[in-house]
Length: 186
Image 1 (tube, rainbow, N blue to C red):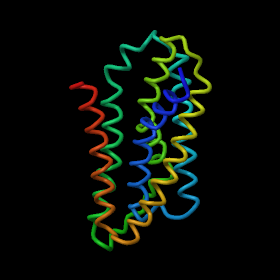
Image 2: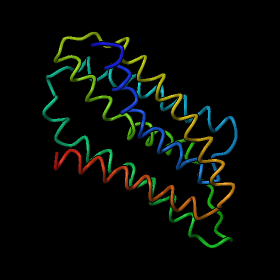
Image 3: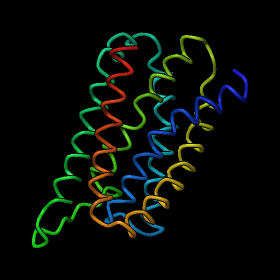
Image 4: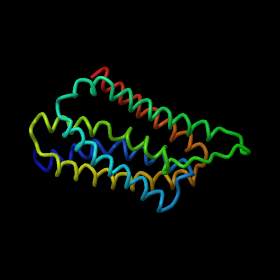
């Protein structure tokens, strides 16, 4: 696999991490350098690890995973997106407390955005391509895209408030819908 092909795959996989980071930034609860670091670190790490895991699993369970991976990603993204929307629309006395850059929300988002990277790892195993360099490139690109997405989303969230939080939740749900549509109809 050439550098250009590897970079193109990495950029394609990083788009979900970018969009989710953008949504987290707009939430108004994931602010500052620490939140940016947590998102970028976790998304980059999971984007690195999932192709390695997929490659290790190889083609033995490829059919079973491909049958449900898009539904898992959709469920995770819809859950987090729905919670963001609910909290944004809550009355002021019901102040939202969850930060999408912490705890289980961060883990669920990390898994949801990296399921496609698992499939890439399976593909690399079937093509008998070593996984380490492509996985490293995928992880670094996801990390960089996450930083850019979060910082941009944070600026939008500060400027437009709760409306951007609702938009971020809707964005997460739409990413999940896109994943299902791509796998079911393509």
